[in-house]
Image 1 (cartoon, rainbow, N blue to C red):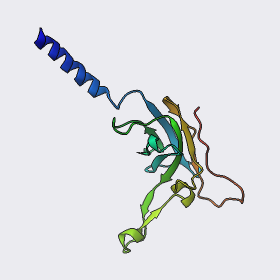
Image 2: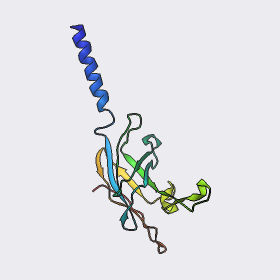
Image 3: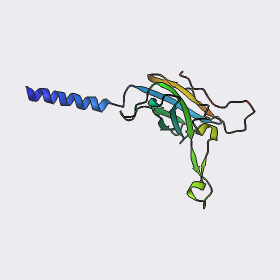
Image 4: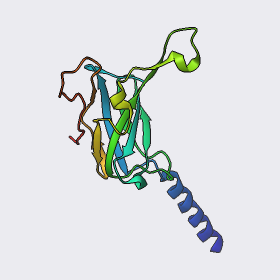
Length: 153
């Protein structure tokens, strides 16, 4: 009987551990749009607006500009809260220059730093369908704001 109980307990622990970090919790789905087109291969970082205990989370966009942010490790869960969103995408610059000189960002500076990005999200527990994150690299009129305050649909 002790052997059966130990075996059952071990099986329950294995099933519980297998489910950790992959299901439930806070999930955010969205799309990055640059100049009206989906942005593939961008790095999207969710940085806590003020509560550092939420932790920063990073995800890449797919070929269609979409991303899904979810808990990948039980040590770094995605939690509900207020986030600012930083976006970046690097491309190779001129051949023959040093490795750092050859790297150029396709994203304007204002979207690449926590202090200046206009992109924000309020994540709730469960599924979050975010409005598209719009980035505009074209010249802007004074007082215009190409950023997006992200909300759930």
